[in-house]
Image (cartoon, rainbow, N blue to C red; front, side):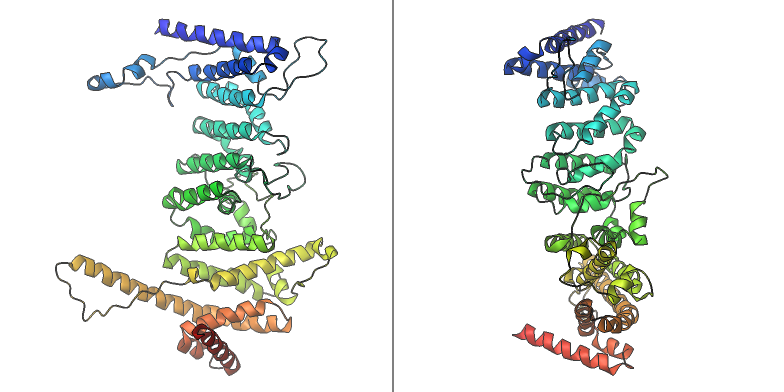
Length: 518
């Protein structure tokens, strides 16, 4: 063991000599690509050698005698802990900064550290931190985070990508230390879409025209989803909504990866992930910060930490933004069962449509004072106008969701139980009967909820929208007609004292059926 350790120590000594020579003769190295590659390899070797014999618990790997031939190499290296010298560690840390330190007092111009060497140095320092007792990470964490806080026009995508991967690995061993930095790390799900990650003023949403940061976004999604699946971090604040926005990313690789992780392993881990966060996501995606539902979502699972994952720098407004929001809603509805859809519909009716009936609040204000279609520039800058517009968008999205085929309880072909024979395939037949009976029950529950709860809300909201000449009236009537066409007799029973609305619904229903036949 001692002989093997000395062998690796000799290798580390050679790497230290190469890196030290790089600092001493920086100008020469920077003008020679072969020398720079030599430095890059030396830095990489330091990290790899430091991990030899490493395992998560720093315990010696035990091998079964019967399988000794299969793990000879592991057994040879098990328990080795080759620690680089303090000087070598300082040299590696010196490579993390953007500029090389001046060797001579007469030097006035600082030379830039090549980005490829910095990127490898960040990986190496992460490997050294994994093998350390924690002191090195405490000394280095601010350097890692500082690199993430760089403005996008000054940062390097490969460096930030490596830093994210390093923090993901370190979170496994130093969970508490890394978990509190989740608000910063989460912003990189939208890396390159923001002019700044941190700062006093909100970051502006800008197009990632050259896609140089798409790899950062991919690594952020992979790293965070992996940590969530292993329970090292939780869905905190608006982290879930940042994942949702990633599913409609301009880069196809990023959007497909986000959908695959969110609708795959993350949904499998928590089947109620979409239904539990659906209504909150409507408020968040429309940046409706002045509502209590947004506030509750923003501080979910904060656990007294204080800072939580925010939604700064993301803007899904405008026509293109609306299409993306609807795409997100349909994706979530696709992975919901009928019970969840009924629960979501009930919550939308209570929290959104019911909230619009109240005497105060932004939802009510948006119904009574609709925004103009052609707004002047001074209105766009008005805080009141912005709040009213966000509230109106929440209502528009709600009606779009409620009228979407994806939100309806699926109707299956009815089964005649009297003529159904249960023979050798009795289990399959029983399962079919159960599924049919369950579907009929859910259809009745949905009908009862829509007719007895939703219709009265819509009836009371209708005159408010009519008196204010709100464009929302069209969406409301479309939803009422949809319910009327599905459950005509039940709706007529509820609206028996309001024959005018019944005639309106009958007329609109005939017009829709006429168009469908054409």
